[in-house]
Image (cartoon, rainbow, N blue to C red; front, side, top):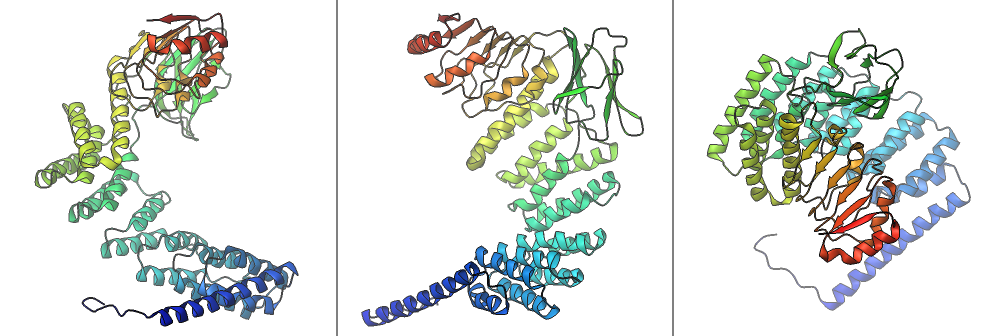
Length: 517
C-alpha cells in the first residue's frame, strides 16, 4: 500500500518462506511426474483425468497435459457429464488466465471433436461475458469469430456488438479488427460501407488523436481502394508478349487477346504469351460476366496508373476528412497518427502539389516518430518510384534514372521489365533484398554505385546484363559468386578501394573485364 512502511522480514521468516516454497514446488513436481507416468502407461480413464485437474487450475498453460486429456477423452467416448466437467475446467482455467492459448484451444477442440451436441449459442454468451470483463482480450475475440460462424450468428448482430465495445472504449484494436473481417462477408454495397465507416472512425480518431487503434482502421479503409486501371503496359520481346499489371489479377478476372492460347503467369503482376504472328493488337481484362474491366493495345503505356478508383461521393467524404486533419494538425502539429493519415490521404486524393507536401510531412514524421523511421523511409521510396514512373516511363524509354533518390527499398520493379539502362546509384539499399531485381530481365547496364551494399546475396540471374557498376560499396568477397548466374555479364566496374575484390571476381570468371575507376 502507498505511504506505508515495508515490514522487514527476519532471516527466520525468510527461511520459513523458502521452505514452504520448496515444499509446494516438490508437490508440483510430484504431480507432474504422476501425470507423465500415467500417460506413459497409457492410462485413459477418469482417474487419469482427475490427476491433472489441480495442475491445470494452478497453471492453465501446460500444453502437454491438455494434449494428454485430449487422448483420454478420445479413448473414453465420454458421457455428457464428463464433457460438461471438462468445459467447466476450461472455464475455471480461463478465470485464472483469461489469455491462456491452451485453455481456449482445448475448449474449442472439445466442442468440435468430442461434444455430440455443442451449444455454440451458449459459447457466444460466454465470449460476451469475458469481453465485458476485458474488452481487449484478443484470444476471446478470436474465439468469438469461430463461435459466431458455428452458430451462424447474423453478421448485423456481430457488427452491433463490435460497435458497443468500441463505444465503451475507442482503443479496442480487436473490435476494430473484427469489424474489418465482418465487412468482408456482409455483401453490402462497399461504397456505402466505406462512407459510413469513415465517418465513424473520424469521430473515434478525433476524440483521442494520440490513440492509434482508430487511425489504423481508417488507414485500412483507405488501403482498400484499388487503382482504377489494372494494365500498365504490354510489349513484345522476340516471340513473347509480356503484360505488366498494376495490381494482382482478381481470381474472377481473365485476360483475352492475341489468339486463343492461354496467358501464362510469370509473377503475380506479370503475364506472358508466346506466339509467332500477332493478328490483333488489343488485349482485354474481363470479369466473369464478360464485362470489359480494362484494355490496352500492344506497345502502349497506360497513364495515371496510380490514381485510385474513387466515386464523387467518396471523394467528397475523403476531402472533408483531409480538411479536418489540417485543422487538427494546426492544433496538434506533433500528432504523428494524424500526420501519417494526412500523408496517406494526400497521396490517395492527389490534389495540387500533393507530392511535395507528402515528402515534407514524411520528413517531419521521421523526426516525430523515430522508432518507425525505417517505415517512413520505405514509404518515401515507394512514393518517389511511383512519381518517377507516372512522369517518366514513356512508351519507348530505355533508361531509368533513380540516382540519388534516397531510396531504401525496391517497389514496382516489374514495371522496369523492358528498360535497358537502369541507374540506382547513390541510394541506401543495404537492407533491401536484391532478388527484387529479378524483374529487370531486359536490363543490359545496371548501376548500383554507392548503394551501401555489403554483399550481393540473392542477386538474380539477369541473362541480358552486360555491365554492372559496384563502385563505393563494401561488398563481401564470398557473395560475388552470385554474379556467375548472369551469363552475359562482360564488365564489372569497381573503384581503387576494391582492388582485392577484382582478384576474387577474376577467379570466379576470367572472361569478365574488371574496370577500376
